[in-house]
Image 1 (cartoon, one colour):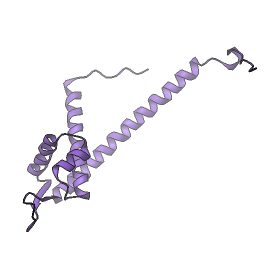
Image 2 (cartoon, helix red, strand yellow; image 1 turned 90 degrees about the horizontal axis):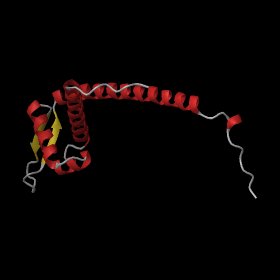
Image 3 (cartoon, one colour; image 1 turned 120 degrees about the vertical axis):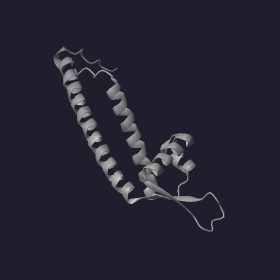
Image 4 (cartoon, helix red, strand yellow; image 1 turned 30 degrees about the vertical axis):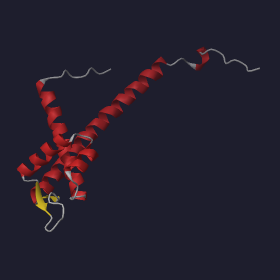
Length: 138
């Protein structure tokens, strides 16, 4: 049985960055498919608060990964479209590659844990010859 690694400042920071990257990737993926999504729709799709969504969108705008363009002549004055910039497209590709690598590592670790648990249960299983005899139904 493997013992989990102790939680350190590095692992907490790494998990925070990983969650941060995952959120950014989700936002970029959603907006690439539907650039007309508003922040409320984005928040609902992400399952996070509107405030967190706004913070994330503002960070992506500041990094230059997204640009915001208003609809000209739109009756809704606050109607915007979010477009991925060329830098945003390339960063999305990098985030996707890191996400895929991390998920493959998680999959492999889970597969190894499942194999170990299956071996453990097989070793502790009662052999059929020692099992209690089945009752006859009347």
